[in-house]
Length: 378
Image (cartoon, rainbow, N blue to C red):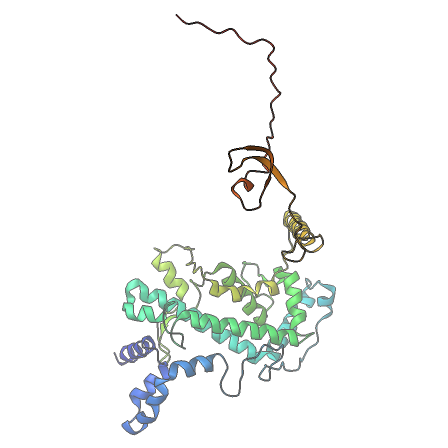
């Protein structure tokens, strides 16, 4: 019973937009210490967002390729095996060397890898908590706190945790790129030979590269936009470590009447596009002939438009002087009642609108030599 009360207070504090740790510490603190905690809680949302984005504790946002707080890869304890250069690690001896090298690469990027794993697990738990509460296991207020419209703070909306996971994945790939012959070697090899990471049962992880696993999972979720189900637990208490469901996948299967592979939940949002960037790092897909042909036609059309716009003479209003219009003549009636066969049409007059009209389909003239007889009717 005390665990349930603490967890309910934790979730309610998240629904109010406050950090869970601040709310718990404020509830357990003495009146003297509560005076120092409450001002922090009043601005906890902004501070937590900035801390989660790495804008506090000496960090700063930057668009440079290298930042002062970048994670520096540790020195490698093992050199890449020769089979990576040969692009063939199918033999038992070569594959064992590939595994050892994968573990050495994971160890060199242990800090960035740990941050990515923690961010992914937090997102998986939060998005499953949202579905778990939405199905009637908890109040609608707690479900709204975990949902897409919940507060963008740690412990709040699952979209906030999604962005943190995406940032961690990009930082991991950035650190992997800086490692040069270490992480890049194993990543490029598995991108060309993804079958070497699939075991006999069809499960991934045969190469034992945790970095490759994180990039692959990020691509999978970003491409399918289906974060549920996953293998993380559901509705856990951070203080006691107790969870109501040990596996989101098992719970999701039970919700669909025990179906072995129930349809996943598709969260069609643009927030997953950042995770989809990882697909370019782990997939070696080449465009088909039809796609190349379509792209070539589009490129030719764009070139034709560019040539028409920039490589041919174009009329610029006001640059060239307009010539005086030619004199127009038409039949007119003077004020005296006299008719004029070739009168000059003044610009802007009533006759100026139709003076330049012409008959495009002229008829042949009709000549009559003998007048027709008059028809006499009785």
